[in-house]
Image 1: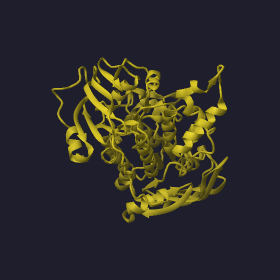
Image 2: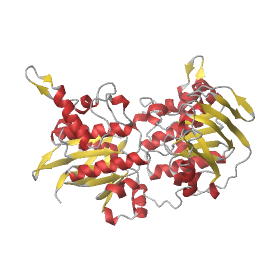
Image 3: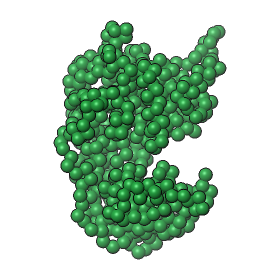
Image 4: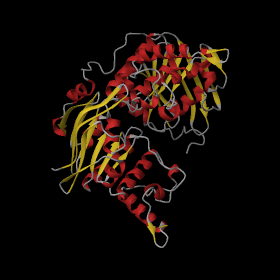
Length: 507
């Protein structure tokens, strides 16, 4: 099989960081090549090199057209060579139609006066959507679509520009299992059409399901490429993290003490109803269920992001009034949201400013922020959590996904927390970062914190929790002791019929 793309001896550095060093990589006609590596391995820089956004310090990029090598040095050359990228966090124009998004930048026009040819654009957009088995049409407003549907639009946009090489960056991270399967089918179909795909993912399932070959990067260096049928998962993990992970879910010997937090009969019309559970000091309580079960909505109500209609929340025996997030922080309740980029971080700010934000008043003297004290405290916490950065003055936007996740945890530790709510804490991070986050969670419970962990990953739930609360359709269907549970028991509870117990107003 002939190569369609080659990168030869590519290196790229930024101040204080060697992002890529001597990278060699090739992509063949009509293959799906899986690229894996820890957060910070250089994958994002790699994408921007291929698409011409970054110019490498050394090396060359060759796109083979009719067997002849064509160098890629600019975004315009990459686009003309049929190279397109689809990112985990879809960038779109939410207030205009799907057709307008698909043809943005290469609109169809007609003479005279080069007017936009709306009929042709709509017709061709619908044709592309039908090819991708989309369940919406080109006249839909982009902002009304789900994340999975928006990804389909991005794929249609790439096809409309005659993309022959498609880079997919963590496309399954925000998707449910059913949506992942739909994406797998679409990706298989693109391969059959002759599109060559670089599929970047932390999920082994994606690689096993799709890849012809898999390549590992670590610390900006090429480690190895396997054919899919040669892959041994144990070797793959070692290649990714540079060490053997003996215990993926670290063992913990702490025993939870007395109950200190309780939710009783919590209800919010249309979202959840009669939800009750408790948390003990030094305990990890898992909140799980299928997508749409109401887990995040309950946690947002506890933290004060949204309200609830009835029920009560008690901390250390005292009932709390309806909270706002700043009240929750004052009472020792911290929250790590699922969408860290949208809700958990201010990306353009420095690490130190993000970490100190919840307790900024501690660093105020005569109305001025003591930046030295702020930086020292942030540095202590960031160091404890192993945040990889040149200094606490680095902007959070420059960090890898796993390190951004650690910065959010650092924010929680900057205050005097008692209960920490972690909503999908390992979503979108690699195997090495997952283990690091698990170790941090174990350290927190050793210190006496209580943790509510929202997770859709059953192995994670079984590996990390002391007790499990299972939800479906906004109701608690089971509360389990983890050592007495297994995947079958959890799935049975998650799929339990609650038709006679639906939350009022649930659609």
